[in-house]
Image 1 (cartoon, rainbow, N blue to C red):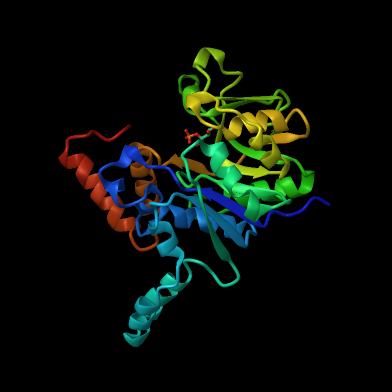
Image 2 (image 1 turned 30 degrees about the vertical axis):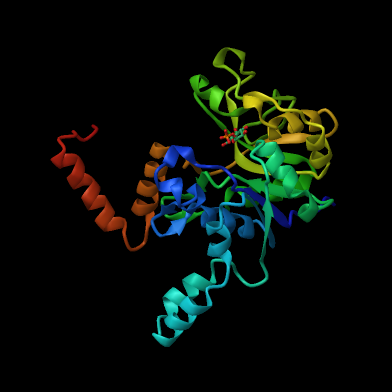
Length: 304
Ligand code: G1P
């Protein structure tokens, strides 16, 4: 029986230049959707999938993520004394009991593949997850909550023993923003990957199935990353090591249930905020009314 993943790696060393000037002091992973930073959504998804060890690959300038997951003694004492139990629970549950956070520094920004390799000493010789917190995946349609994307993948990976990459269809003109896979036997949910290429031009893309930021990987990937040379953009690409892995063993594409918001872009962050507000148990009515009012005031006609 293949092992269940227990460890999740969060590459959070990026500069987040798209969100300057905010990201001058606030890492992009700390940008909130309503009242929770993006990293919290990613962490909750990993914990739901069964992970108890969270490995953050950060850079030496970014302390905010470590501070966020650290225990806030003074704040907790103040909330306790003031009898603010609900808020106290929110602060305490940032990292539930039994889950540990480990911080690893990526000394140089050499690419996503290099960031994942930095986690090798903590992950060791077992399958693990990689979550890119920019990709926020929502799986609550019409008020019904389903399993998070990583849990769906971890269940499928546990059953098959194969490495798994989350995929979704993208318009052909967007292939240059993603790793693109060729999976000829894709059955609509899952299929073995025969080839993967990082950010191909639309004309060169083997399909329109794009990798989004969730991976379940067998530890062999670390050895392959050690010998991966810089690829697209001059960076050590995770995609290139996966291309080597799939020549040796099964790597499957997995189309998750849920909607992915690309919170690495302005419009994706806006879209996620709107969706979470409309779905929020306390804010939904007010958010709906104000969106309708705003559209009306700005003269935007309702869609038929
Ligand atoms: C990374 C990966 C790419 C993947 C994407 C998903 O690219 O290199 O293969 O499709 O994440 O978000 P980035 O968006 O970091 O440029």
